[in-house]
Length: 390
Ligand SMILES: *Cc1c(COP(=O)(O)O)cnc(C)c1O
Image (cartoon, rainbow, N blue to C red; front, side, top):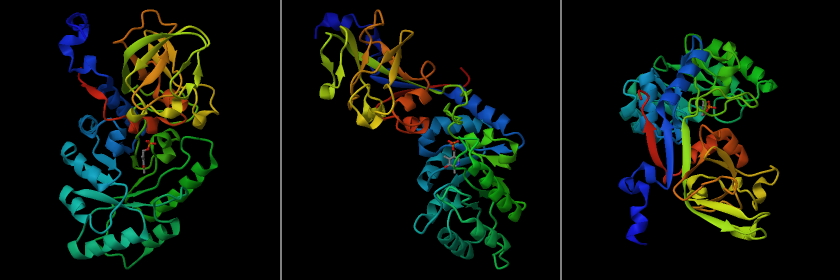
């Protein structure tokens, strides 16, 4: 390491900053806002919630919640009470629904932060009724399972509850909801069956707001919208409906810095397991991102049995070119074949996904979905939030 080496580094002046980060993610809050507004427009007369569970699909609860609150969102969904408590400062007077519901030992979090539990089972309902008897009126949502067999009261349980004359007056749900299992596959017969079942629920709880549609559900048509829609992935730029062109703006650009470009000869192999055999003299770029950053090992160009049913591994984007990922993706490092990219050099950034390479494609190459790619974005990313007003 000589002084001359450092002196020649253009990024020296910003060595601690984004421009020199090993791994960086740019999050376009303007695109996020526009996507949410698009989902609101598509939701017609229904209100549109913001689904910000899992640290806002991995993008950061604070920036995302502030942006969507400023855009007009007043109904938020989180996975659990801890997430709700974290969200509260950024959505001061909004309704925050907690999807996991409520059980003994965490009720104070709900009260302290004004969180609305989504009641998912008879057991949760009984506990909640006990709280009402003790503390008086408190809002809740009722989740009814209409065919997914995940969380929720069964349809008969929900209908019986609606008709139960012994229901205490303090029990006044502000929302009835259900979740679609196959909304991303519009022709699936389960969609219609769930719609029919949910219509019964919404009718039985007349006067209570009803909510059925996630992102894909919004695209199924007006009859799926009811009073409140719950788009998540579309807001974050992800693919909602299988096989339909994604018109959402990309929100995240993930990039990894080239640490070294090396020359290798035809007949040599690359990365662990010697799984990639070079068929030509090659230039290999090694970037500082790996599976511990959420760049899934399943996307490896070779040598990973997990994804052997798919023809090829992940790609990157560099200087206007697609570059194939080479050999196994490792914990902190990933190899790309940059033989065909003139001028590729250390210090360049390879786009892992973003405007030039969709998260849907990057996820598919790793045998997974946009949701998982986003929510596993690692802690080592240097994050830059582009302000919506810029
Ligand atoms: C995550 C979630 C959503 C949002 O789903 P997307 O497919 O991301 O739009 C809506 N409702 C419930 C109950 C969820 O768990």
